[in-house]
Amino acid sequence: MPICSTCTSAITSKTPGLPCSGSCEKYFHGKCVGLSGQDVGRLIMPGALWNCADCRSVSQKRASLLAAGNDDEIEGECSISSMSILKEIQTEMKAFNSKYDTILESVNFCSNQITTFERLLSELNKRMTTIEKLSKENADLKVMVGQLTTRIDNIEQQARLNNIEIQGVPEKSNENIIQILEHIGQHIQCTISPSNVNSTHRVAHSTQSEKPKSIIVKFHSKVKRDEILAAAKIKRLSYSDKSQPGLVIENISRGLFINEHLTTNTKLLLKKAKDMSKSNNYKFVWVRNGGVFARKNERSKVLRIVNEKLIEIIIKKKVPNDVKLSENVRRMIEGGDNCEFFDSISDSQPFDITNKLTITNLKCEIKCKDTEIDCLQRLNSELVRSITDKETIISLLNSDIQNRNRPSGERKQHYNVATLTNSTRASVISKPQTESKKNYSTIASKQSITVEQVSESINQAGTSKQNQHLVQPNEHNVTPVVTPWTTVNHRKKRSELLVGTNSLSNSSLKGIPKTMVLHVSRLNPNTTTEDLKSFLKPNFPEVVCENWKSIVPEIYALFKVTIYDKNSQKAMESSVWPEDAHVQRFFFSKRTWKL
Image (cartoon, rainbow, N blue to C red; front, side, top):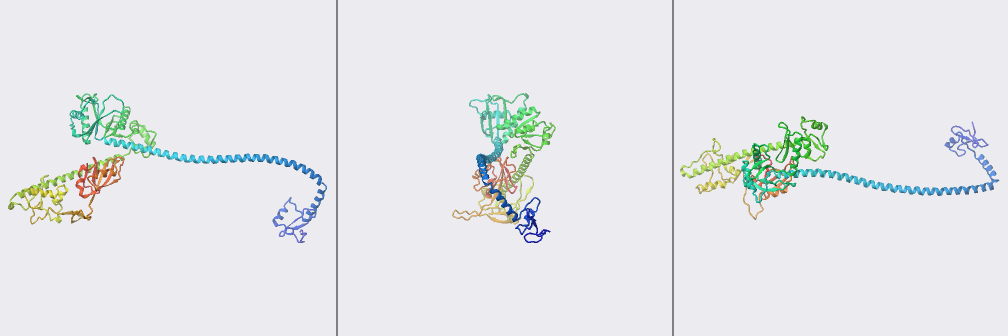
């Protein structure tokens, strides 16, 4: 076991040590020579050398003795080599500095280029965003323009619903179109009087043509227009010479045509549909109420054509590329003549509803027609009831006048009145006023016959007494007719009320008038609340109009109109409402008028 030369203690694993690599070859503890355990571990590794302090001092003395004799020679050699090395170093440093400057310039240039590239990239991204936004706006505007164009065309066509277009009438100086219309009416066996005509004029052709200008006639009603069109068609079919292109009227025209007044777009659509139908074996293509229809034969379905895409789909059985639909539907359409027509086609532009073929429009039209039929039935029943009530009142007045013309002793106290509409007799024995279900003053007010008018008729019959009753009461019949009270039904209970009429100019005390709500429908889709309000203001100063949600806003508009209940009789006059508008009670389906 080695012994430490410093502390003379044994070197163990707990107190490690290391040998000297010098000439003494002694052992020392690591802590005795100022080495840590990690240093001792590294120095005892193979190849490591460590000298103690004594051996290190001996080697330094020997080195100094050897170097003292050759200092002059070494110094000379070192100075020469140092100068050459220094020059080489300086030369290399200059080259290095030059390269460094070049590299620095390149780095700065690249940095500037990167900055410029980033700025350009940012601007490019902004422009791309702007382009995408403008592209989307452009697509939306195209859709909007298409919708507006279709809507304007529909409005123009709707404005021409009462018009006919007469072609083939030569122009003459100082011509009288009304007389021409009368001659045409005599020829087609349909009377056309000046009172039926609203306006007439000639229109020029869109292209240079030698044909005479067409005559446009606007009638007061669509019924008269349809009657003339039907009569002209019947007359044309009655000709034995089927090759005759039009009507032949002496002193008027040798080839006259009477058609609906169509817009330019509808005429072009009709022309294209006819041209394609000839080459695709479609037997019927016609126009009705401004719409273009097609039918392949007598047993096939009637199809409506609203744009050129549908012409290709329906007649040519070829789907345009910009129309999106499934492959099955595409194969079904383009498969042949025996394929059934598809349910729906969606255009590439999602908001263009004019290119959609769905059964929704058909259902809507059917529902509208059912509503119109229901309204007409209710109006018919209301008119029958009105006629019955008026005839009852007239019968009562005649009986009362006859009774009053008799001497006072011969006057009857009680009598029955038979209605004029049927053979049944209605006993006019009224209950007391609090239980009267239908007194004659209420009937008169419903049918625009006031109590004052009834009293005036009675007074003109020969009586000078005031406040007489329509029915002379007996001990079982006490029902005064002229009364300020009005029967009001409220929750199945009947109570009596009095409506005040004292309106002093210097008093601000007054009641709140009762209002009624009307439902006005089938107006032009571009009608606004301000337009309707300004139209109704002269007849109803208190009118309030609200736009109501329509199922098909592109076809017609709905409005909720609020007026005073005292103006209900005026509201039943068709002259105060727009032409062809439908008016009905909003929450109660009691009355419906087509104006």
